[in-house]
Image (cartoon, rainbow, N blue to C red; front, side, top):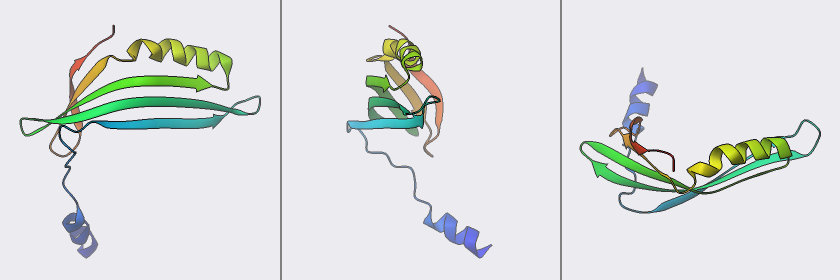
Length: 107
């Protein structure tokens, strides 16, 4: 009981940087069945803005690359390439949970 109370007291509120461009890179590497590795890389831009009691999170993929397994890389490239540059805006609660899609679509 005391540990739970202490953990609750240490919980920080969700407070993203507002109106500040963020850029991040996701890299995932997995072993290929025939040896070597398969590598996926996605570069995205993000921006939080205030919306009501919560936030709006605008995401935009800027680059995607995959290598290592030619068939898997080609499939991934065909699936993800059309989303490059297309905005996706999510509604995010005051607690930091994505609750709805505000805007999003394909080219």
